[in-house]
Length: 457
Image (cartoon, rainbow, N blue to C red; front, side, top):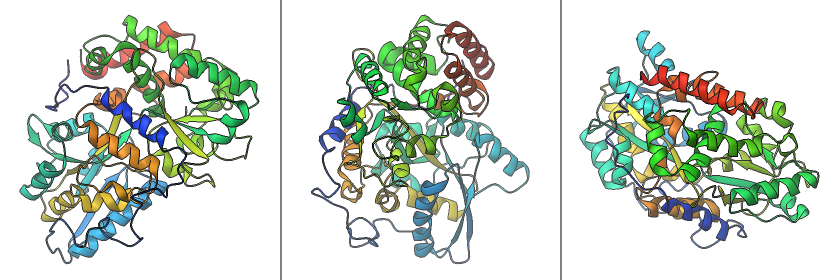
């Protein structure tokens, strides 16, 4: 079994389900409820002064790499601009590609590593440390991490007990966003169980609106579908074992999860554009086509994390009014809660890199991006009032209240060759499953072959 390197605790899984309940309780709001965000231009979400002291770095030039694009990248640029303002340094954002480990390897081999990288997989952090690319957290960054993060998040940023990274961004990846008008027109209410979801999908599709917009062109979304079904149906212990490849992908529990997922993916009329249309749909479009077209959108629902709000913001729909959300339905006894996140790591032993990590570990940085929407921070010192609407405030409150009770994205824990590479490994196998959901045994065999090769067992 390949070591994932983190010393993370064996944490529970149920408490974050309240995120969906909080979101649902806020669905009727217009984002203007109590504790609204401060005026635009405020630096730290209502604080009169910065809460973290940064060194002066006049003339220093830094590069930061991440796989973020579009609005997410633009919002992060505002965080970097504040860092520049406070330190005098100049920061350049470097767009990276998945798998980011390969991208960074090329940069490092060419003698041009970025100063800081935001890694979207636990496996990528372990690889960066194994390759001797990553620098341990300095004293100031470590102090901010210890003050502002729960033990579970700090453990995820550590390798063999040494803290290397700061989880700047988190995600609740167990949410289904829906078009309020489409649900109302079909007389459908948010489902709480998988059986109710399939019934709702049948009713929606019969009304003339395909039920679900699936971003099949991006394999990572399909891993999230599988993980939510598997966690709820097979339970957290099996989830942890499969994440470490202690049980095989040919296991009966995997067969059951794929068969269940096939109840949705196997119905051409349930999917926007059918299976072929889904396979041609990238994530941003999967969201925007759900919230455009008036009362005849391309689909009534789209599954993904809280960051969906960023893409909804590119349409005329309003979160909390036109775009509502419910928790991923329970397949087994309990609804699943899968979390993801991006960990900031220094790749150069420079004062500037450590200063940026210190800033990213502080509430000052997170509150800037939280105010823009489509972003959730695991930093418990962040003022939830800065989130732009009641739905996101509810999700953020639940994330912090849950402490360490969550399960981290399974594919992000895997070696990148299996869980984080476009056109290969789990991503490609699940795309092939979407194309032909009846071939459960064949897909299981391929998943196991690819996992065995990547994990080395």
